[in-house]
Amino acid sequence: MPALSCRFSSEEASQAGCWPEEMDGSEQDEQPSVHPFALARTPGAQLDFTKEYSPLELFQLTFSQIFSRTRFEAISWALHISDPDTDGQNDALRGTDRYDRLFRLRPLIDEVVAACRSFYQPRQQLSIDERMVATKARIGFKQYMKAKPTKWGFKLFVLSDACNGYTCDFNVYTGKQKSPTGKGLSHNAVINLLTPYLGTGYQVYIDNWYTSTALFQELHGMRFGACGTCRENRKGYPVTKVNDMPRNAERGTVKWIRQGQMLYVKWMDTREVKMCSTFHMAFQGDTTVRNVRNTDGTWTSCRVPIPVSVRE
Image (cartoon, rainbow, N blue to C red):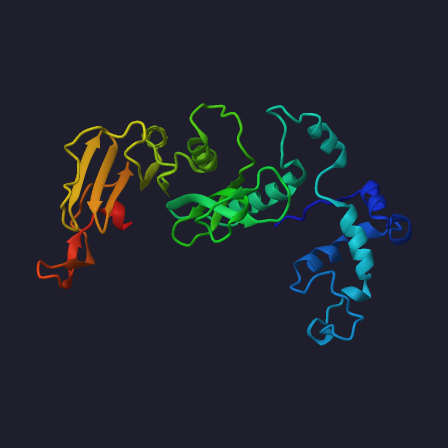
């Protein structure tokens, strides 16, 4: 990853009460030492190695030969990723559409995103989903997601390689904002992430929060395949009883309907699974193993039909 430019602020250091005694102007030369110190897996900068109970033998690091813990804390107080002068210009835009809530972190985010895009060429199959980054910061756009292992934190919309999970791109959600397109957050999140790859034959898999007929049609027009679980109450979903699944349908029952390039598939597993795709066939003879209950109450493993959009 390219080196990230950091700046030192005398104002922040003076607030910490340590600039006159601890900062002598040589802190810029010590930045290369600060970076690996931040990456080292230690109990933390607050651990006092002068105490008898400190496990000094486990952490024989060379940082103490360069500067003390107090000096490191002083440098940390004064370290800025963004330019303090332009910070003020952004703060003046608070309350407008031009205000960037991540402005002070923007240089770091841009470097990470650039590295994700530069050092890996994703396969044809991509996926988009939310990801949580834990934080205890008191910020207005911290999110809670019950279904995620990390419940509280920054919410990221992540574009990843569906085969190995590599992060190709991401956007940080900063709270409710006016949509310039008027098509909603889920629609814009997908388009913003896919823009660098649009029209190149990629196929993206998403869940039912993103899936909509309007989004899939737009991606298809840009020569981009899309597939995902869907909800029947979404605008554009075909309103017809021809494709309804019988209440007593057996496992493996498949129903589908096609409208132009849009394929809507229903498949009965333990419950009804609904899929939408612009590049799959309805059924290609694939099967999968499922436990099926017999009339006498016993269970038997057997192979049942499965649509290719569900199998993938």
